[in-house]
Length: 274
Ligand SMILES: NC(=O)c1ccc[n+]([C@@H]2O[C@H](COP(=O)([O-])OP(=O)(O)OC[C@H]3O[C@@H](n4cnc5c(N)ncnc54)[C@H](OP(=O)(O)O)[C@@H]3O)[C@@H](O)[C@H]2O)c1
Image 1 (spheres, rainbow, N blue to C red):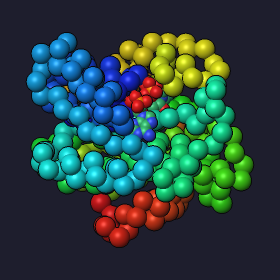
Image 2: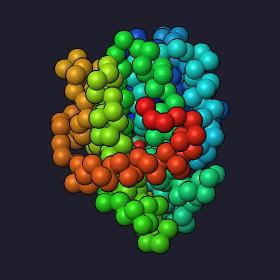
Image 3: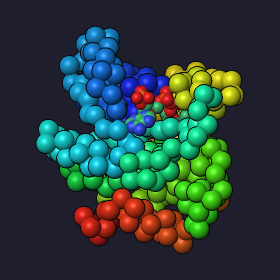
Image 4: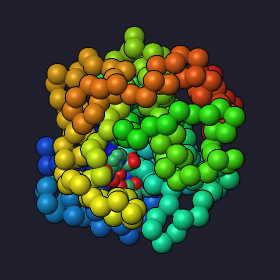
């Protein structure tokens, strides 16, 4: 199982729990020291030696490509991919917009384009598993995408940018499900909880309202629950199927976003689709 953004917060707790259950766990993070420390902490607490880590800063799509090929070098199949890594665009002490290496909006790129690209590149490994699950960690904070201003360059607001990146990930979930529904791969997404006490939430003006453990609990449920074996194309509010933003059900909007995302990630040159 590969959990992106598992050096902190919800992802780290989920990685620990899955390792305690005996899974082979691939941690992912952007800093080598933090990755090593988390791997060692999980090794020590779980006694599970099958924990490795991958490094990739998702502010660069090149890093995502390198990570996928590094994964392919050591592992030929993947049972569960949890696209958990994410950022909120501004923090209390820094309210500026930041750009990715490709000069895209950083939040849109880390939260949406990076998992879009990584998932495509890992599809051969997911297909090589007897059955596989893709779990996208979105949010209840979802705002309609304006295709004339996809990355909110004209109309910037940190919350709008974050909420659009999360709706984009939800739309990707539903569209990928349509493409994979005849295969043994389920694709779902979840809102892990409201203002859970993590680094991301501690950095914004609102006060945390819940524990990160609750979010990890929902992720572990999505990754392991036998009753979800055939459930796909669903948005969950924690562990309960729920209704996403209306635009996620608009097929034309999903297909347009997909086409634009293939261009932005350069995937068009690599593949014609899943
Ligand atoms: N907490 C909530 O209430 C809440 C609510 C709804 C949705 N979510 C979603 O839940 C997911 C986990 O968030 P969290 O609350 O656990 O936040 P967190 O504690 O800040 O953890 C975020 C993880 O993503 C990683 N990450 C951030 N930027 C990255 C980059 N450029 N490249 C690679 N990795 C990067 C972080 O790495 P570092 O350790 O290096 O920072 C960390 O491992 C996110 O997708 C978030 O949007 C959270």
